[in-house]
Each structure stands twice: as C-alpha cells, then as structure tokens.
Amino acid sequence: MKKKITKFIDFLKEFDFLWSLPMSFGIFIIYPIIGEHIWGEGFSSYSPEFFQAGLYAGLIAILFNSMTQMGIYINFPEVYEYYLKDGFKDLPTWQKVIIFFSVYGLFFFSLLKIWTVVV
Image (cartoon, rainbow, N blue to C red; front, top):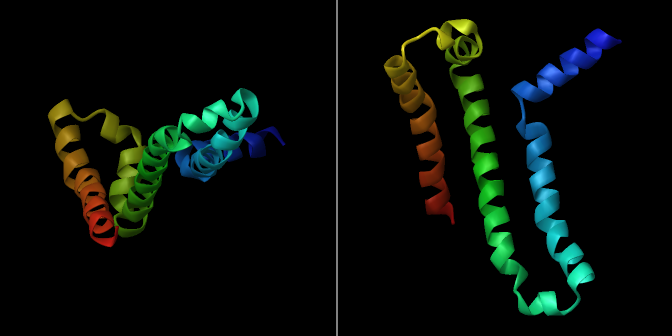
C-alpha cells in the first residue's frame, strides 16, 4: 500500500498539471463569490475582474506549461526521458540553457503565437 501511495505521489509530481490546473480554475471561479460573501457588496465596487485577470493569467500559464510538457512528452519522448534522468542535471549550465530554449522555449512560444491568432 505504501508503494502505491509513493508511486501516486511521484506521478502527481511528474504531471503536476493534473492537480494544479483544476485547482487554479476552481480559485478563478470561487474567488469572486467568496469575496462578495465576506466583504459584502462593497467588494463589487472593487471589480472582481481586477483580481480575476491575474488568476486568468496564472491559469493560462499553467495550461500552456502543461500543454508544452505533454507536447514534448508525445513528440520528443527521448528528450523528455533524458530531461527526467540525472544525466541532464550533470550537464554544464550552458548546455542546459541551450536544450531548454531550443525545445521547451520554442514549443511554448509556438503555443503563445497560436493563442494570439485564435484570441
């Protein structure tokens, strides 16, 4: 039983978007409701959109990060496995930066460009 729990925790650590994305979406929805309940209608004059813009940006960042990780996992499985192993940690800093920006950064940038065209 203990082994299954540790495997589940390791799975959640590897694919953190499975819990962070629903949690941030829930906060995005519930925050204005709770804020108005606690602070009353005066909270309404302090537009919840002001706070929700930050939550929305965080939600989009988590979503794109998750999509980027899954895209690398599906399209470049060897690179993803190498990234998770200790061999990547032993590389010099400049090689880590080049690998990071060439694969992860360009994939993330392409998602942002698609988002700007769609929205």
